[in-house]
Length: 237
Image 1 (tube, rainbow, N blue to C red):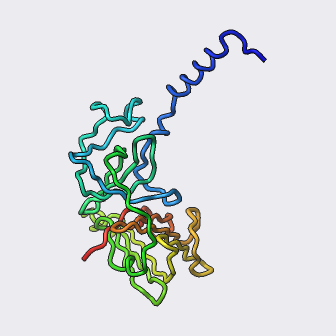
Image 2: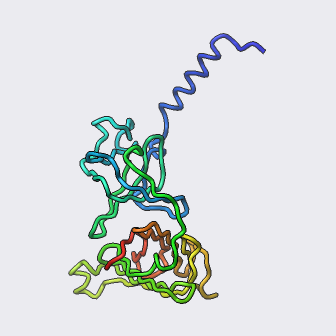
Image 3: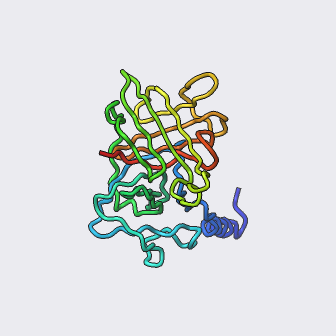
């Protein structure tokens, strides 16, 4: 059936309108990593400083390589990052600093080299992992399983809360076997099970090992108010 005059032009205009009205959230790079989504480790390989780029929420024309989209923060060759998503030529990446601080944002995919995915052995998990001064996870082998113990606080770095005895605490201790690079558990009334539930009233945690980084996500039932084990961890000496 012949198309009506102008129908092709109308379709073109509609397509252009859709492209121009891409919602800002489509180019957002979340600060908090969601372990329900694929994660990968990459290394910055650009010859020069690689600046983080603004998101679509900050500027509708971003992310792009245009100077106006560049953030002041930057990485250098050799810096490892956790990639949690992509949008065209850009990757949503998070960098973990030496003291536990993180920085998330868009980076050019051309400036990153992704590490090949591999299932780590049990010994790769072991050690004392920290994510800033208030989150620690100790992992040791127990046969073909791992004993995982976590301790976290909220407010321990606040002198006033310490003085008032208002520091909230949380902990867990489980023995479980990881599945490749993933370790998941809920420590509830039925004991420890290998599943994660964000709404569970018992402590639920999931981890992804991306050496040298351990990504962790917990629900809100692993301790007092505002206590969380969520974050990126680096193994100590």
